[in-house]
Length: 74
Figure 1 (cartoon, helix red, strand yellow):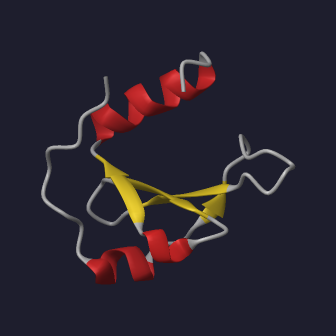
Figure 2 (figure 1 turned 90 degrees about the vertical axis):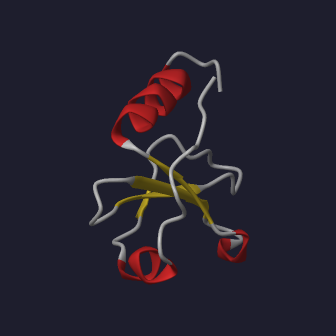
């Protein structure tokens, strides 16, 4: 299980982030974007509805998330 226990990332850090569409995004508008943040954390958001905000991960949690995506458990 991937848990998020760190404090919230300041909104200004998310606004300044350089977002990239994930290569794992589907072709049926199921797109997600990723950003490496200045704090060393990682963020993921829904491309279609950015108003939903972003999920953020520390480095270890990010590696667990990526591994879960790659092995199909997410």
